[in-house]
Image 1 (cartoon, helix red, strand yellow):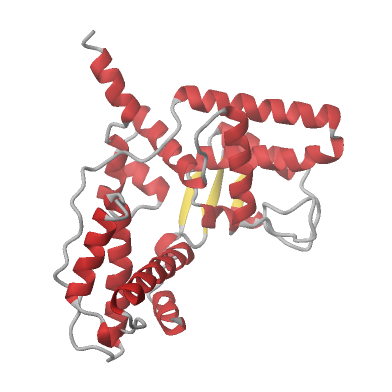
Image 2 (tube, rainbow, N blue to C red):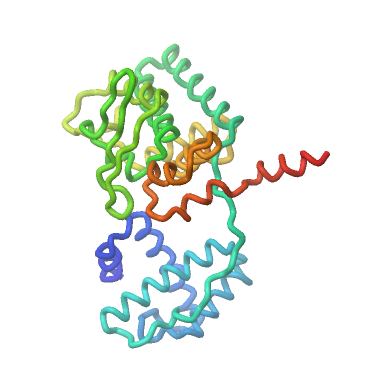
Length: 300
């Protein structure tokens, strides 16, 4: 499996993509062993196995189309690796079709949810300053990074990779340089007033450390704030604000949806998000559940 992991890395797959593919392949491997009584290796994988696994995901586990297609994609990558390394002559996943699905809008925060989140963060800052002054510095960082995500649309990996020299901020303008975005692309994202205010308020109190990472730990020995720690911050604010969920990707989707709702063209949105294909950006003009609710309510 290590060889397959190295292959994915050589294909310039993102770390999260590699992690997901390995997890999906492990799921298939367990199913394959239970079904066939054999350990998985490329030589004993057949098109029938792939078709049966697809049917198992749909009929037994009753997985969503997106989950089924993701796991089939992991199998396809596994088969490509095996073929390119000479372990098999033909691709057993080649003729297995993905599950057709209606394009659904990604999850983003509507204006009411954004307002609830803003209030929750403001209360958190006020409470920490009054009752837990030693914790206030951590809360200042947490609020700043959450607002920064909401107003820049950066991916989690891009946020954690930021260094002090990547951000330029003045009173009237600012920008952040994403050095190594998805696919190794570099891009510059302008900072609006809210993003500039959020980052400056953190930089004004950021502890001096040996690391030049922008987002550093405050209450632990580790200097660089991990992606998992950032996810926990967002989960806590989601709970405080009464939201179902809050993740870095939901912040990214919210940033994009706000741009589209403000009349910004898809080409500009794509450039800000670092999309190379405009079709990827079109999901933000797909109506979400709330949009459809308002549509039918208009008939009443």
